Image 1: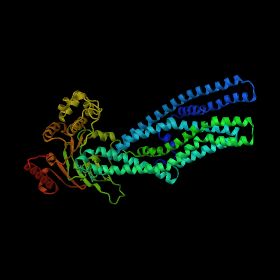
Image 2 (image 1 turned 180 degrees about the horizontal axis):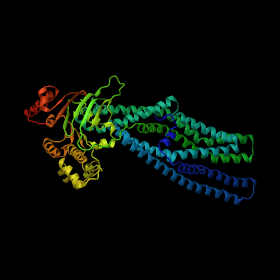
Image 3 (image 1 turned 90 degrees about the vertical axis):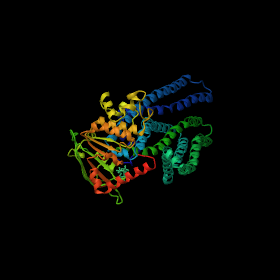
Length: 602
Ligand SMILES: Nc1ncnc2c1ncn2[C@@H]1O[C@H](COP(=O)(O)OP(=O)(O)OP(=O)(O)O)[C@@H](O)[C@H]1O
């Protein structure tokens, strides 16, 4: 585990690599440019002082001195612009390299995580992390660090200048600024401040999530007549969020008011101290000049102070964001073996497999698979059936190592699946899920999935999966863009694209998880005929609810509550008069009832 107590900025640089030489150069340039931004305040004071001294002493103005200070003013502004541009360019270049490097690292890391990571509703969080959190790191690397160094440098230089000239005036200005900083900081400091800030953030996140869910589930909510209930829940959250904002504003408004008043009044405080000093030393021209300098240079201290305050606010959010990024980077990929993909037809063996989605220490956990043993010979057609929640999909997913089983073993081609490299296992198993993801790419690319295959091969798979005809009916045939922003597919069409992908992958094991759930009876028959030839010789594991679709299976495994209740052929299981026979009669009953009613929902 990473040390989350470490300074958030250090964590950014530990997570995202910046070339040290370039970055230090960039930060130095930017910091120097901030320092130079204070120079004109001083040079303008020197010019005014030349004119005032001449007028007070009745002497001629030393125009050469004026020109020197004017030259320094222009020179410092010009040098500041060049340094600022160079620094900004270098810091941004480092930031974008660092972010590129981090994004690639996260992508590679995610590619090595078990597939189960993606089934737990993580996609939204990962998307947020890849976009928002990493973008915020750009702020820190490209802007904040150099701004803070610059602000610190400028404040230090001004402090040296002011304290060397007049200690009471310098104390006045720095005491006022320190007071403003502490007041501002107190808005979020302390237990109460932290709690208010945390509550507000939590409530805003909760509200975002509720709004997304409300919008996504609007169809169901309207159809099932509960939009008011959903809106009421949302209203409750909006009100809660508003109350958190009120509490927050109640706390920060007077604090911000005091902070602003103090920063704006810095000149007034200076004047008060200056007047007292002048009262004590009337007619002291040197003191008058010093007071003038403080009045001109004083405002230069405000902007670096603002930088420090804003940086404090950024830091609070940064820590949370770094925790999210570290949370993903800390996830350990499953260890993998080195065995290559097996050649030819392969069998599958589940030996006493147990698995739960809950932690092993949880005494109330439910076993998704409980000591399941299944032998599926090479080239056979096996089916997994049973009541909902029985563990069918879990069994299919364990075969592709979405997760690792808790006990027992699964072997493919006689070797434990943990002994294969991930790539070899992925080459061995093709999956078709009930929910298919269609990429915003052409129909050809959606089937080929970045493999080097010919048009003829893609068409052959598409014909077998019964999608060739509907693809040809699209405006650009196989070049038609599908998915988001492209041609929308029906659920059945999307599933047939997924079947074409699996056929083209030509893996020795094919797992079909409710792969034809959206296919109508007529198309299912045609699809089966098309697939039969291509699936010939492969080991097929079909997960199905519609029992008539798996009657031909060489072996049917019936799972209930994670346990294997029975197995055998359709005929043998009917003879047993057990769970399968019961499920079969219920399905027949349902169909007869639908026929009597004159409707068919199959
Ligand atoms: N990602 C998950 N996280 C936590 N629990 C899960 C997850 N997926 C499934 N489960 C639980 O594991 C058990 C088995 O689920 P599984 O999806 O394997 O059953 P199934 O037989 O395929 O069900 P169905 O026929 O309804 O698809 C169920 O109790 C389910 O709630």
